[in-house]
Image (cartoon, rainbow, N blue to C red; front, side):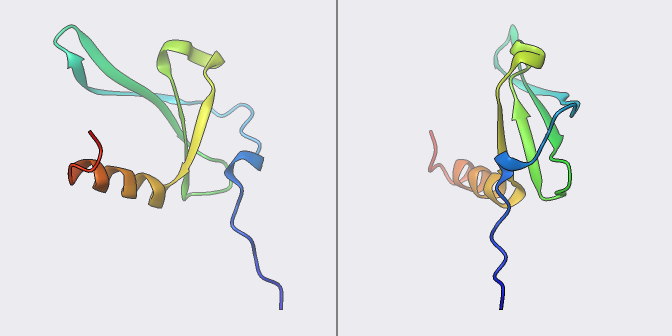
Length: 81
């Protein structure tokens, strides 16, 4: 029996992926908060996030939808300040 290991999100080639700028809310009245995001190729369950201020030079972070769901749930529960 072969056990399939979980996908290493950083091994997936994301060359040429077009990150979409998503904005909403703001830290202050004069500054809007934005993030660049895209679905990781080959995985509908993984997302790439980057910094819009850095454009194409932005390093990226990769998360599964479950990881992001857990993060937002912890934030909404007041566990992340």
